[in-house]
Length: 66
Image (cartoon, rainbow, N blue to C red):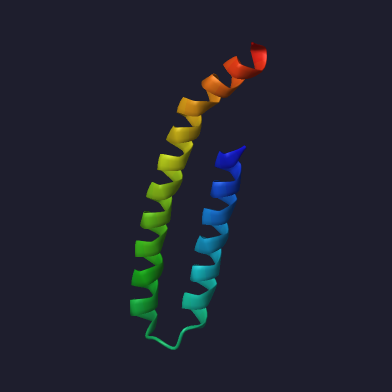
């Protein structure tokens, strides 16, 4: 399924970004703010992906049944 591949890609990108930020030489407050912003952005993308999968899944099931 295309949705699962996209979800895996987004999750991997988010994890990679978080690790990079944790090792970046910045002040803790600034790093935590970046992580928090990134988390909210990724959370929104994940919710949009899940909504899309929820809409498309019944269509795919119908195609399999027919």
